[in-house]
Length: 493
Image (cartoon, rainbow, N blue to C red; front, side):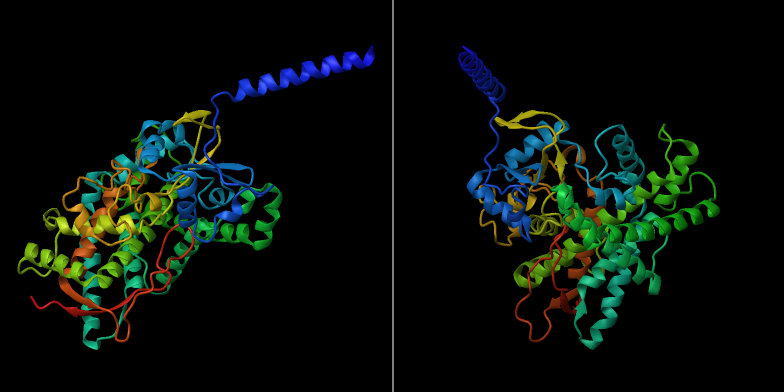
């Protein structure tokens, strides 16, 4: 009798389990996923250049693909249509950021705009940036800084022309964007030994942020991150940057010369703190996180885009010539291009868009996090799933682009596609709530610098160089692996 009871109970339990399973999973179809290993999941498939690897995988598994990085599910978005769903239609659901120990160390507990969790705090610091730091009026107010720094670079190039020696354009462009950001954010630029140290600090900060931390995905391998010294390195560079920003803020406090005289971003933030102009208190940590974001988002990304622009122009002399003809027609007999000239230079804007398409500074947009269980295009997405938009793959998708691997600025001349997050085929600045608030600031520096480089000089590769190394670095930002060198000759106007 007893065995029969056990059999009945077993059958009842089995029936209950099967019924519960099918009811709980009904309609919950996960996106296609490649096979995975125990513990590490699909980590081994990312490779050194994840944007390329994920593009290849998406060709087999589709524009919405689910990977598992250790214990963390990762939804990879590889089409404009799917990106629109994530970044516009259901933007709020996907507006959170995943947690990262490295980012907590470097960005004051992730208190900056880029990496702060979605919520009231993030809305507050975003409003400060949009209304007080990166508004149209504020960007226009720093026009003199842009003009002066670009003119200084032009003079340095001109002085070097007599020697006919190759210029390290990579270094010059980084100095240009760094000097502009320093003057606008901090009120001064850093040159000489202090400048070298400051640039080293920024480069190391970007390197640390771009390193993949396996412990974030496989907790039992956390010890490897400690052994590698990465956390120690992150704490060291964070401490250096923190001490530097504290010193800058203290100098601004002691020199404060009354309300309304906002010479730089630190002045603006101190005024907001003093007057409570935004309706909520801001502390020094918030100020430092905001200023730090300006350097991370504004220096390396802008100089990298300019570097790729000059690289492609050197590889395509006919495009260079057409852009020079446009600049010289617009400027007439003037030696420099002004910001007013930019609206009359459609080919320049097409060249910049094509650079963003082929060489987006962030090939994969900053990760998002799904905030709730959600159904996306008939697929079930679990709350907490990390979401990655492969902007690089979308910008090379033959579904949207004719000859996607070719450098053809002409494709944008009769196109309404822009880079402001309205067209999901081209997403260099992201889109939606978490899109970059500094788009306008970056675009005017890019266009003005590039226009003057080609307007005032003719450019050629150094003697003996027939090709340019197009290999990329690994990490968060897609830089050229080898510095770009070129020979400048003054334009005879």
